Length: 613
Image 1 (cartoon, rainbow, N blue to C red):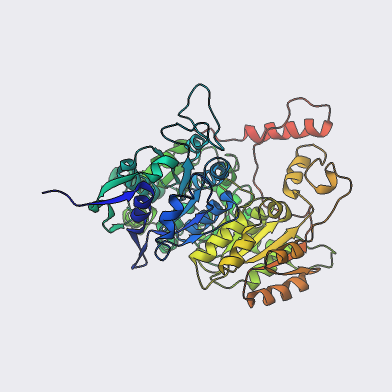
Image 2 (image 1 turned 180 degrees about the vertical axis):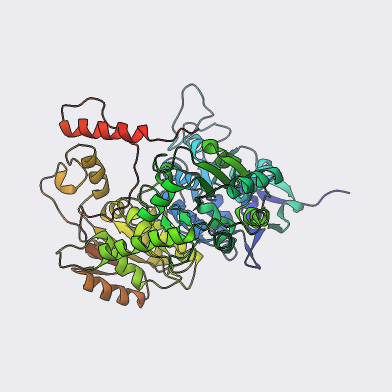
């Protein structure tokens, strides 16, 4: 019996396949691919756009202003959906494609799914070199799309139309695998997009995808339980994997039952509310004194769903040299780092099984953690309280925004000084309402992610906090959000340049240079009118002169009908304390005494580093 076939171009078949994939979120069946962010140009406008136009009622296409920011919006969407639903970002060949490489790095670093589809040169090469083609003299198979190999989990180039039959399911499986999750990239040769092929009907059958929950090895669980039962001062580090597993309730119950305090990574912040009795604050370089004190005291550390990057570990100076680590992670690569006892498994399922193995054992460490966290909250109150200073601090601005935010409104930040200030000072009211992109620390993520978050969570209003430096780098999705009707509130904190890097520069003995605008090669410092700039893109906007103005502006912004931008000047030199050490390069020789002193201090930090792998 002959199998039935459907004759379609490769581009049409690809798009039809995307519309046939479904998933389940909170018991509701939804499309796996919620939409496409696309900028069309040669390489994707004549064939791929033709296919997308025909299905826009099922797979909506949203036009962005920059390919990088479109992909960042897709990442913000995926994070808001906790990796359960995916957006596509599509570009033409050449610079349209390479614009997305940075965003692919963001998704890869943060273990987030996004499907990147880019046009490519001709598979048959007859018209070579084509417009925007970068030729490699010794290897004509290489195009700029090969740059994505370093920053994606799955990479393919379609040179024959039938190749998508095997490639697309592999790309989807990669993006939904909790261990391998990350961006998938597929290059679409522009001549292959036009070719018709008889695709089997089975390729377009409806498919329901479910995210697997791998169970941990029983022996590993038993070893982890035994190590924990012998602990006197255990500590839990909650990473982003807790949120993506949906293990928030299980973590809170586990920590409460066994009386183990929970500290959080930047990606993990928001799994617990600020006032949860087991919560003890953010850990690490932009962490709290409470969490970092508990880390220094800990003899056994349970790291759940975290890759233990340097901002979490204080470049491995935050822990006692003899402390033992239990790493619970769906990814074997992350679970086996730093000589940890590896427990490879889903966070939710592993916590349920580990608590059974522990029985009624309790560490009795919550009273100590609550005392430390109480002192930390008092310190926060002190730094966030209004003063008579002419220019407010980040901490004070964060507090006003936090107080005005609704319980389900998500705070979004990324680069500069704000990640430290919101990680320390934003008091989470409901789980999963905090998104600080710090795996790649990508300037420009903030506003684009706000657009994606607003799409993902209708009925809530993302609050984007962004510095003047990041705003100037990428702001055009204010216009995108106005066009599409996805409202966000953007708070621009103008401190005159790249203030937090100036802070690091000064801390290592280097005079202020090329970071704050006043210290750059300019005729004279000039302040951008960010409010008017935002208004020119269709947003509502207001500049604030004081914290009182900011409070009134936030109340106004909550009631507006579109994206609203609030600007305020902030102090470039005031920061909330609590930081752990950080290992960075400092010149071994210098004519500056301040640099030589910083070098000696850096060597002292390195002498305290825990030896790991």
